[in-house]
Image (cartoon, rainbow over all chains, first blue to last red; front, side):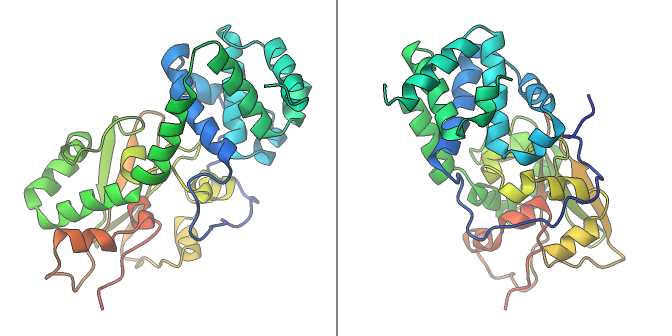
Length: 103
Length: 197
């Protein structure tokens, strides 16, 4: 499937920004998201191709505006929902609870 | 995608998934802690540097590395997720190799750890295949015009590791000392190693 992820050769995306002494994760949540990849892979039985496909279906502007691990979050949510492990309703409910300080 | 997910703080979204999956007994938060610790502290470019240094001092190993990268890298104990199918590209006076994943972020985790943000960023992925010498210049690297530059685009299955040229003036160094000279960028192909002073 072609789309915004197929970036090879595209013009106008600006300079390559490098960071000296870059940390492996830029925030604790990135580490948790990374850990979820290996952990969910085991029980949910999805493939890297499927994971990437979910990212590739993101809207073009959304894809460019969001960070790498935010892309992963989109993929987790979709893959886990498709397989019935975590529904959108469960996520919304837990989100509301966490925002209220429950859990 | 539901609207709320777009708007929510990513830290909260991760917490939502982690807490539901933990509650259902599908994941163990301690396993996540261990994974984070492993990739923050144990797996990184030092692994790849040991592979490179060994290839420089041991011609038979170098040959095995170029013939079957996965097996030769495993000899040093590096294998697993995102390193299942490794191809090693040797830089010479004739050819300079560099690596990208234009479609996403594929990178050899067991030998280099997790990729830096610039490797996963749109500008690098877009430009390196169209203007590799321009990108190298941004990294402060100039490759002679007589050297061919090859850019390798990683697939979802295969991972590349560049075997950089051994710096001049390092004849007397031990394998360990040589490994200390090898940079992450030289194993992606966006860096070259300077001659020893």
